[in-house]
Every structure is written in structure tokens, then in C-alpha cells.
Image 1 (cartoon, helix red, strand yellow):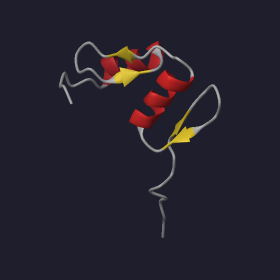
Image 2 (image 1 turned 60 degrees about the vertical axis):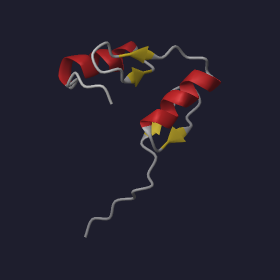
Image 3 (image 1 turned 180 degrees about the horizontal axis):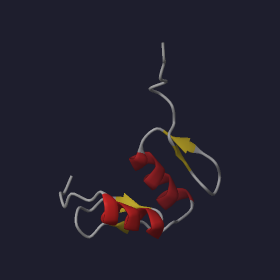
Image 4 (image 1 turned 45 degrees about the horizontal axis):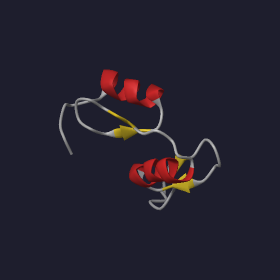
Amino acid sequence: MLYVNILQKKYKCEKDGEKFDTYEKYIEHGRKVHHKVVLKCNKCGKQFVSEKDRLHHVQARCKDKKD
């Protein structure tokens, strides 16, 4: 039987290695601790800490919906 740890922290800060369980907490950490510029998708408003992630989202997944 396969067990999945639902409390597993999936998002890891590339600068200090801190891990977060939600993407929102990861974004907030980057903004507050590292004074990182947060980029937004022009279609749906989702936030990203890297241009690479934003471009991937726009090209592959954006459904053009505001959350």
C-alpha cells in the first residue's frame, strides 16, 4: 500500500532552502524575506517568483481565469 504524506512541503526556496506546504506561502516568503519581485500572469493573475515559471504557466496551463 502506498502512503502519501499530505503534510509534505512541496515548495522549496532556492535561496535558503526553506520549504513551504502551499505555493502562496512560498511566494510570500520570496517577497518578504528576499525582497524578490513577484511576476504575475497577465491572463489570470497567478503570481510567480521566476520568469521561467511564469512563461511555463502561460504556455502550458493558463486557463485565462481569475482566481
